Length: 108
Image 1 (cartoon, rainbow, N blue to C red):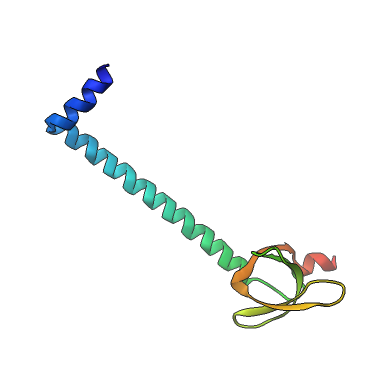
Image 2: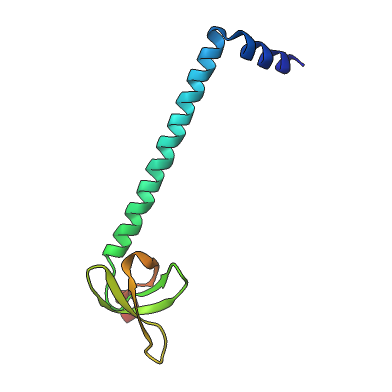
């Protein structure tokens, strides 16, 4: 009952307590936005670094779930060999989701 009275009193009366509460709420929202955007930028940088380090021979998985070995790399695209039949697909580098096996790890 007291909490309900506080909410109606603050909403109706305004006052200094209401302004402080709204100010704190605004600060918390800005902080949450800042941390979220910082986290997103960090993830984007990690993904870009992974795509920049791709090499011929790496086994990768695309965003669409295609698994294959890189046979050639150009500026924005790469060619995957997806099966023992040597089926080749050209994709954008931005479609790479993860590197499953690095080329140097496959040789060892």
